[in-house]
Image 1 (cartoon, rainbow, N blue to C red):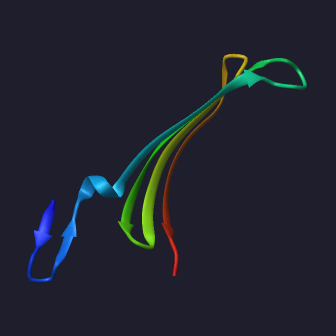
Image 2: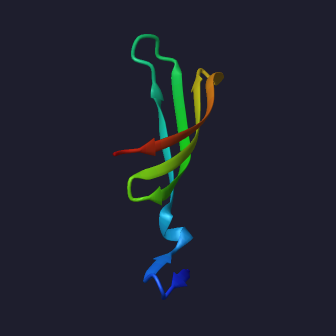
Length: 78
């Protein structure tokens, strides 16, 4: 943790970091093919109103890759 006593502010990098993963598996209703989706990501809170999200998403149907997505987003509010 970094602490600045003159200003009275502190910053802890790990408290600003969120890791997540979502996994979905099953069968497609219309054709019965197997379905698997995986999404993993990291959210880093820059300030109270701004964060950066890095994610990876993978979708497979019948063991064939349908989608591989890498994404970086900046989220902010006024």
